[in-house]
Length: 71
Image (cartoon, rainbow, N blue to C red):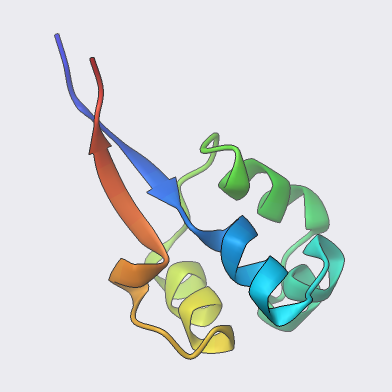
């Protein structure tokens, strides 16, 4: 059965803004490990966290997080 998995542009956005994982984590009130898991697609954020991350990058949520069809 195929489904969709959440992907993210967090790593690319962080690089563009010269932010470390720790700096982003501090800005949104989570641990650095949470950012690591988000970047690896191993964790789906709460709506509040997704909103806060998008706010840091001044971009809509759907430009930070998106769904990709699994095979």
